[in-house]
Length: 103
Image 1 (cartoon, rainbow, N blue to C red):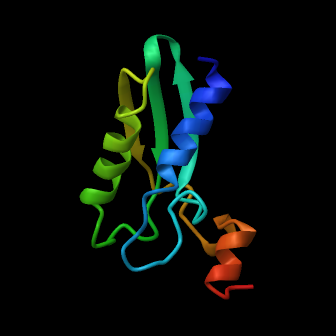
Image 2: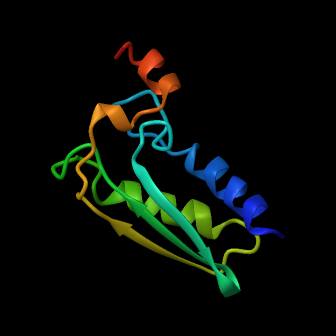
């Protein structure tokens, strides 16, 4: 499987993860900062949360990690939660801003 195919599958899986308080997936919300695929199926993810005090700060990254690990070709996931740069609504996709009426 090519990296681009694997990356598409990773994005598909990430798009099934939602912040329970927001009806938009975390990818469209702009919470995923980086996806890097290394040899031997290691996937490195940098993600953030809408706020450091997010009520799902413990469970949301774990859900992302588990969904990515379920993809064929992924051997391990190194997921880092970062707060620099801080998340802002400008990181959201146009689709997310439309759904949330945040234009």
